[in-house]
Image (cartoon, rainbow, N blue to C red):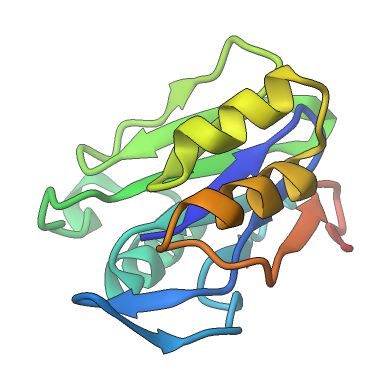
Length: 152
């Protein structure tokens, strides 16, 4: 899986891709963070193909007839919007508002949430998760959603 974290302004994800029990691409985060046309940033955890399908669906306006079919096998994501708003999305593809200061999804979710509770940034939280979760690595990329998102 992976770890995705949002700290109220920045969204971060690690770069590990795992297939079965093997790490197949240790440093490629580009399939996890997606800048949407709106300036929001979507980051997903789970099957990379499903993450790409959901990113395309979100960018196309979330039309119900075009809704991708997901496997219900651990997919999760966060959509960080400009001005600090965030939504959590799961395999049902119904974005739900996040009403807390921070959020995380993925196999390292608990570690990242704990780190942010203790004052770490989203990027730092993913790095903390990488120390404890075998499906998360320390190659972290983060973005701040704006009209033109900023890559950190």
